[in-house]
Amino acid sequence: MQLKDAHILVIDDDEDVLTALRLLLKPQVKQVVVEKNPNALQGILSKQDFDVVILDMNYNGLVNTGNEGIFWLNKIKSWKPATAVMLITAYGDIDLAIRSLKEGASDFLVKPWKNEKLLESIAEILAKKKKAGAQKIKLDSETQIIGDSEPMQEVFVKLKKVAPTDANVLVLGENGTGKDLIARSIHENSLRKNKPFVKVDVGALTESLFESELFGYKKGAFTDAREDRKGRFEAADGGTLFLDEIGNISLRQQARLLTVLQNRQVTPLGSNEPVNIDIRLICATNLSLKDLADEGKFRKDLIYRINTVDLMIPPLRDRGTDLSLLAQYFVKLYAEKYGKQAFSLDPGFIKKLKEHAFPGNVRELQYALERAVIMAEGSILVAEDLAFSPIEQQTETEHKLKTTNLDAVEKNTILRVIEKNKGNISKSAKELGITRTALYRRLNKYDL
Image (cartoon, rainbow, N blue to C red; front, side):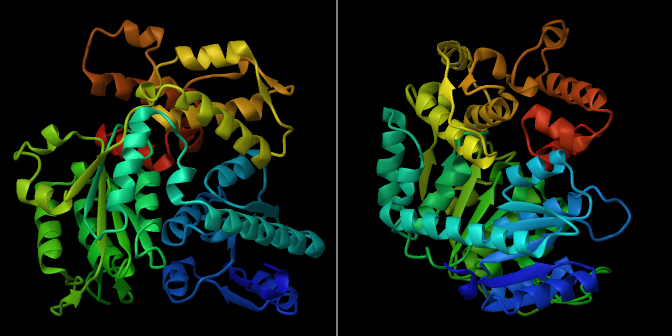
């Protein structure tokens, strides 16, 4: 795609910035839309697709950490995964740049920008999207899931059978095995592939947020409901709704979800009028079917409703040579992402990889290899470049713990890492090899 054919959305609370970008881009692109309030993003993106979103990183003017930009970046990627996002801020540093790129940003620019550089960056993003689109036409989605081990081949066979149907799917597997990627692959190989794919981490939703987030609300339904808002069920209408961490929701939440799935209708908060929905449901959990069968924790009638077909994703330790394939893929990916030369892998590096159990699975491998690429000095990755997430391994301190309670081990690890990073949540989450959202969930879990 050329710059002149692009549709650009700019989100910034500074009127001067919006005016400057509108004047710069209008003669260069097919359409430029500007908006001050990031809360309007979902409504705008639900009505139109944009090739690039230029997103400010700070809006409240109080704490310029970039956290708001990362938050809205993640929202955009969950609503419109194919949309490229360029983050822009007056407070740029390398840590924030790396963090935003890791979270899925296509580029990162610092205000004040040079007009030529901005246009060049947008053109590069569009060129990469065009290349990726061409590759996607040639490949089925499954072929982009790396693995030729027997356990993964079994997954692929099952996936090819279930994807073209409208059957509800339950994806099972340990944390970090790639359940999200499998869910997206099912959608992309279904008859709904041109409709929305909406992901919701239901395990992270509180009781109060569960209904408003999933079912939506009407203006005035509660104190902060200043306008009507569609829930995730309505946002996914015609497409696929992916409910992650389904095993972590309460019995009350399960009852509400079951009612919606049975009736194929949602009733927004503050309304008495049900809204019909047409979705294909995919759920995921790290719990086993045996654990889900405990009626004290999970309703059997809901299991039957969400589990027309189940897909068990094997842990990395059971995938044999897939470890090497994945390692080569991630090293190449992050070398390109961070503008480094191609790397070769020292035998000691490979040996250290193979000796590690990877309890955090592919996610832990990805984290370790990204860090190795960033920290490497030369063109050869050596064993010393490889460090594993402390939350996924037993340290000497943990060995000395008198308790065998896994929650206590995890709590102490989190406390130690946060103390080491002087309370910086972003740095702590990165060191632990988990997302900030996942770390916040654990902080709430342990009342820290």
